[in-house]
Image (cartoon, rainbow, N blue to C red):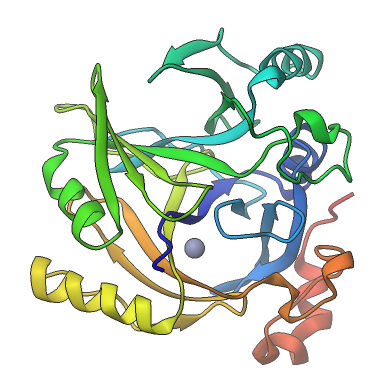
Amino acid sequence: MQINGIHHVTAISGPARRNLDFYGRVLGLRLVKKTVNFDDPGTYHLYYGDVAGAPGTILTFFPWEHAAPGRLGVGETQETVFRVPEGAIGYWAHRFIEHGVPHDVPVKRFGESVLAFRDPDGMRLALVGLPGIEREAAWDGGDVPAEHAIRGFHSVSLLLEDAAPTAAILGDVLGFKEIGREDTLIRYRAEGAALGTIVDLRVAGGFLPARQGAGSVHHVAFRAADDAAQEEMVRRLAENHGIRTTEQRDRNYFRSVYFREPGRVLFEIATDAPGFAVDEPAATLGQALKLPAGLETQRARIEALLPELG
Ligand code: ZN
């Protein structure tokens, strides 16, 4: 069966140490991979997720020590939303006060409780409280008790000039269907997975275009079960929508193609395999600096360039 949904979200942040403190300690996500930006090996690429870094739980960052702040605008991901048990919203509101995390009062969206907050770079995040997910496995290796812990992605929302062209790609290529409308939001859901199954399109005609920087989402990656499923999606993009992707790139933990969807948001299609345990034991994910084979000979130089993570 085809499994669709969000595979990972990649964003730009300020200093790596502050990023790790926020996502690892305050939010209680597991650092599942510590590697470098393959296109700029003097900077980190940090991956956070559940215990295994399963597709639908992975938030990754390119941290830059001196990144200029981004400015939210059309053609960009507006908000990245995690799932928590319904009863945990109060715990999180309290935790945000305790840790000085900027947040809003909880609101209802499509009947669900949503607690919006910001990371130290101003990245827009939210928690959605869902009934019946308390018993789902959760990473509790950090400060957050398992009963309250984040259980993967709920959704992303995209800020767009016009919804229809992006909706066509979500529907025809990425396996999503429209399931509802509320205010300026149109909600799409993918079948076949539990995590990361929702994309909300927010139409905001006349808004300024996005300027990427710290706090901006760089791209959203969608799942392909394997190379054949990815190839089929690439074919549909080309034949039905006239969109060409990049060549497939080997990202070590998944294999990816990239394209700019018609609303200007950068999309990726990433394979579920091979996953994060391909180059280190599952029990110690994220502890050692992992480099792709081609960069191993430069390890000493790269390690000297990377900032201390604390
Ligand atoms: Zn990616």
